[in-house]
Length: 187
Image 1: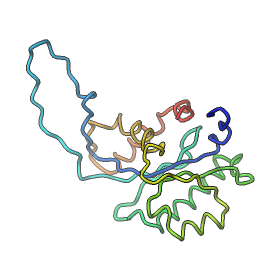
Image 2: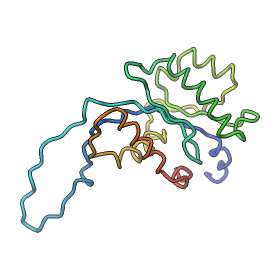
Image 3: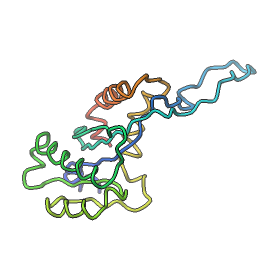
Image 4: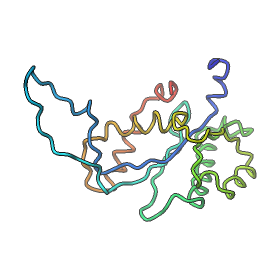
């Protein structure tokens, strides 16, 4: 069935937002250590995510990232902000994916967050004839950003302490660019 819809799948651009922290503890498997049989577990201090964070918005397709941007400090993800993101995404698609831009040959997939489904956004999508792939409610398992991209992006950042928001942004973009095109295609 997937092979029947391969051409359609290549026309989908999906995106979402996620927080990137100045410090995010390693996962259990990242911090695992070898111990000899009977050797006690080393004591480790309890660690939690830092309060310093920045929100990253990413849109991608089967070839890679189409657009990424960071939320400005003090700004909220609301319908006005997301409308401006959609305008910038449209321009990025026109420049980076002209074959999809021609004849409006692409589909947008995003979740059902209130800022994504507000009336002002639905009017924008209707005016620009944007094709929307519906997202089933309460189904993050169907959102590639949630089940794949953000996990892949954040894994190399975990366990590192970043001194500033600029450092977080720089390292996040570096990790995002390090994801090979074949991984996007497989996703």
